[in-house]
Length: 118
View 1 (cartoon, one colour):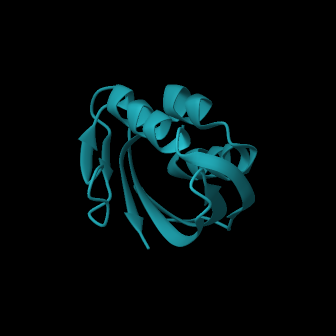
View 2 (cartoon, one colour):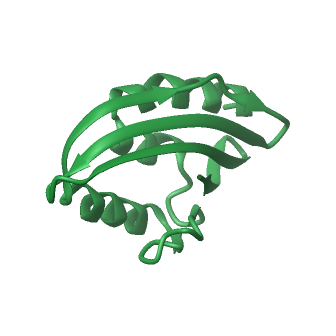
């Protein structure tokens, strides 16, 4: 799978919330790194299992998602930059809006790194 193919799959699956399918088909199971230095809890994780556990922990605190937008990907030989916006309400009633760029690195058709900028 080319980097452009991976980008197309991300643009199709992310708006549908199919995160497990993304992790299981597009991510390198062991090598993938999740880098989010702004997060006090999930700054640097390695492996699909750790990323799925992060998602479960985050989802447990979300009451509802009001909006999710995925922009057009920009690709190079081994990288994908993807605009991503999400608005959600936490179970404590707090509203959160994130306007991010996610940078993915692709090796041999699999995502080996995802880094969040917001």
